[in-house]
Image (cartoon, rainbow, N blue to C red):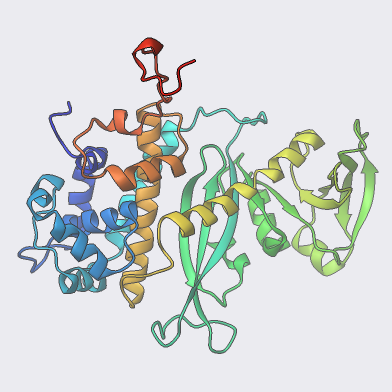
Length: 390
């Protein structure tokens, strides 16, 4: 029940604190800590993400301006720039990684029945990566392919239903995306929607043998032989729907089964792309619509970079960078959980914008986040001052 609590406090009450304490004990996060524990660190970083802080000094100044309220926010330790910097450098990032994974599990249960504009009996995932550019003079460990440029590659497997990230992994920016397929455990019946960077037939055949499906763009130099064609109902959208086999012996040895080749057209521009999949039961129009949902992961990358501040880091070590990214993901998933639990119609972007200016208000959380229509004036017009009488 709301009893004059701050909006920030009410939001943090949706976190499973018993899980957080268990993870802190698992990795000895509070060992030799006297005043500023892992929970204080998480709450300060979460405040920075929600309020749009851009540096450690910015966090320190803003929180010290509300010194009398910090206890009620759950922050028990003394907030100082050096203390927070040391915590980001030294506290094990796996605490926040596993905590975010627990939130992801909760969010997926809440969004499992969300409707899609396509009918799917199984889960569909979008797989892609984005590179966070880093300065090598500040982050010397962030090596890249191009000299003088550094970066960290963020690989993400996104559940299309609800746009919830399910798997997140880090690698050097020079590592090819296809190696991410080695880290995934194929889920039988699930559909993995990918770009052509993941076209590796030996790895894809492993997914096929495990009962998983893949859907991706083909490369222009891929040579296939048509076995037969399926009838197409709408030529404006589907150019062809074919069953094909690979031509080259070396490639066919890696993937000996037949594949489905679908050419999808854009009726407005007239341009087309060729898709490759091992799923033969879905209609071609559903294949086309499903691949369009791959853009949800591009929107996720854009959203998290623009609104959760992972481009300006509060530490220079790999541990500090991973800590900040995982806390940013935890905040993103927490907002998604609150949106579903409170039955809010506002988007995640709108909720974040509201929270950024209401964290220290003592308003019920559902009232602060509820979209309200502006009330029109119903007063008597006769009570209005007449400036220009007839």
